[in-house]
Image (spheres, rainbow, N blue to C red):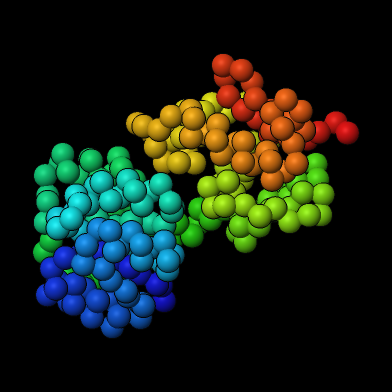
Length: 227
């Protein structure tokens, strides 16, 4: 069983998909438009999202980019748009699969199960330790020298990404692409602000770093302090 969230504006299609997937053992919630769908995903954190592209308030690809800024939840595009340009746009924006209407309930359920198998096989590893810093991607908990760190979701994602690459200098462009899911946008200021917040919560400063080291003109790295 999986918890699925469907974002589809057509009431008849929405009801049919909910009924078909519920009959196959899934828990299905739904939203009729982009903005309510985004909020529902943030609130409920489903296992998988099924997304129509033809939404009344926002193009589905734009919503997909917004979703990718806040979650890694797998997304299956379910739409009537069948041209290659749309498929490429959606996949480049972060979709995990693409199915064209009309489709059978069996075919959609098979896609759901296949995407979930892939995503679960790629789940985050166990706790990462660098010096006195422990980061657990599964529980999304972090501690430093035995003290829990109260991190916002994006701060945790940033710390976990760097902790998984100890000693490796990571460019701000790579951080924007891999942590913020913004391969074609975003600014260095976004990274700088979150690094500043993260340093403060870890009890260090840019001019007196212990774990988070800025390499001017290159990027940032997380190291095990010598002391």
